[in-house]
Length: 452
Image: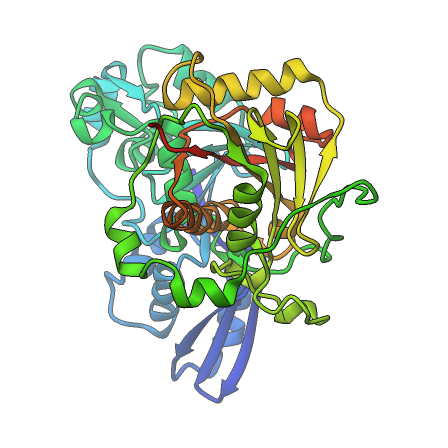
């Protein structure tokens, strides 16, 4: 078996001074200082590979500190290299290790002998998953420091279909050793640990992939601007819009409850009163939460809400489901925060009631439905054109700032507010007639009068 190294894609080298270089991986730059005048030539050699024994020595710097070993160690430390494992008769790697974070390359523990003996005792972790990517099988685990690209599909049959590790196949042995070292497979006693059991797979995957140090895609992470800026959010026809009364902000600034007082008395209120919320109350709450602070400005980039928003993107459309509201018919409306109007949407009444019933079960039971349900519908293209790897996380953070704003305004207005733990995105997309991967609700909040 042979091991060869190669630089990750999107590699670019820029010479700053005679002994100083910058290595660009995507949008990230790594500074390399060396006295080696032939550094460019040495880097050019990397894709052609080296033998396994020399590679291990160079990466781990076991030999005297040569310029080549220092360069490779620096690239390895910064996760710039990938390691390709070839069977002796193959020109295509059997599998490739692509580090996400620094790790001990080809660690010696556990030994091959112990792995062969205990192979059947290991089980794939509940966090390990396979997916097809560019003609290879990609094996990922949010707890691992590496990703593994498997080109030789016969390796999968060894991992899944045999009860004993084949001693004669060096490639399989090394692959399985990395699976053990990097938590892809675990012993039963390790799978029962509380720290493992308390995490659900989607929660851990989302947490790890949306943190920069843990992301498997650091070259394209953050504000990468990978797509063209999308069109504005969908705006409903406003010719028959329902005008809402604007509150007197000057009077509120003078007479409203102090912020500290509102913070201290704020509560989540899961019951609504017998008297329905009024159109005037709903209009005041929506305006105070969602209006633009400089609403007369014609320059979009200067528009700001009273709550913060990552990148000033404003990716949310506001939909209001009315169950009971004085002077407003039941149904679903889109709120236009610039014109301060509600635009009614024609939708199936059964679907609307199902959303309201689901909201009832999320905070209590289906027999107690909210008077009004505010839905934050995210236009994903407005987020993902700019942010990569953290786009959805940013939208959840943005939604959280809106939630707190609604809570505080509702408390100051003596209304009941409750943020719901879940909702049905597919059903909501059906109601507003949008594809769920393009736009849907990611947060719901119940609003009404307080229980008597």
